[in-house]
Image (cartoon, rainbow, N blue to C red; front, top):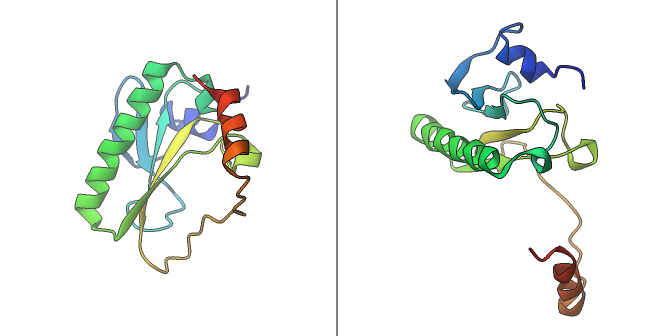
Length: 134
């Protein structure tokens, strides 16, 4: 897999405004701010999707995203907060490197997350659940 733009940021080949970094993750301001305080939290290990992470990596990624969300809330006092993690192009992923958007939200800010709601019924939901039971 070629280096992602995030890997190039991690190696300091591309500029970024970093708000947090440790051995496993990096958090930096999204260059395309939806609202002030929009931060991306990415793994340092380049993997495309959350399904490729070890459980401990996923726990750490989400723990830091939560910490960043609390800091963004304190700094910008948004009306709401969206944490968004997407996988593969069909799942809205635009950079093939696992990351979480920490996105402060305000009513009427223009950011939308819309999909068709389907209600298959309780019995079908039971069938789906059986297929994925852990």
